[in-house]
Amino acid sequence: TKSIQIALDGPAAAGKSTIAKIVAEQLGYIYIDTGAMYRAITLKALNEGINLSDNEAAGELLAKTAIDLQPSENGQLVFLDQQNVTEAIRSQEVTGSVSEMAAHESVRLQMVKLQQQLAEGRGVVMDGRDIGTDVLPKAELKVFMSASVEERARRRFEENKKRNIHTPLEELQGEIAKRDQMDSEREVSPLRQADDAIYLDTTSLTIREAAAEILRLAGERL
Ligand code: C5P
Image 1 (spheres, rainbow, N blue to C red):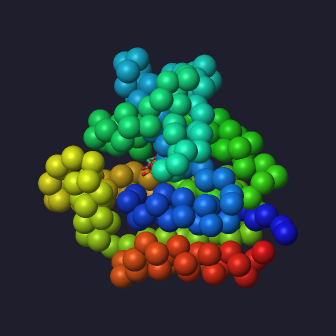
Image 2: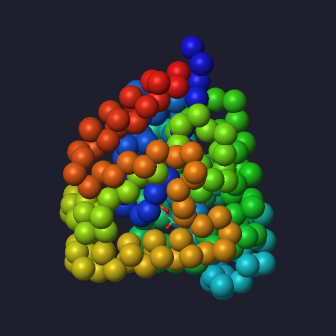
């Protein structure tokens, strides 16, 4: 049977990665979390005290950095220069800085190339902001997933609780809204729905329902 490429885009905390993992597992495809890649380079910039607003410095830093994604039982492990940073890239500090780092053209050019190499010639579910528009413009299935900002903050709050993180709900909502705004308003490949993407509002869907809908759409294209 044929393998397809599935591009899953949308704003922060829309449940993309959770659903992408399920879909990839069901189809036997690889799953690529592109947000994790932007988070990894942001972590390195913070550790090295690089000025986050410097496009050139950001690009130079990425050029000498190895970012690897490896499948694991509960999703995906992220390695930054051979170090496991799977947990570290989820910190509030990284979350608060990643959109500034991801806005740089010097960073995006390299990331998009790397992501295209990872996806080449195989069945893949890739989640991010610009997958349908820039990274995999020929993907057989493009889905743009969203939910109200209140619902997304509530989901992130519940997810954090399990990981013993206790950021107040209002703070999460503010952080998510700010990140969406920065991601949508940047000049280089902003967050937007591709013309040929299917819009999926998950506000009142469970994870299982959203995954089932994407699997149904994928089935039509296999
Ligand atoms: O998906 P996640 O919320 O982990 O992404 C973190 C940040 O990385 C986003 O807010 C965005 O600034 C950036 N990003 C991006 N393009 C992608 C994936 C993520 O700019 N394809």
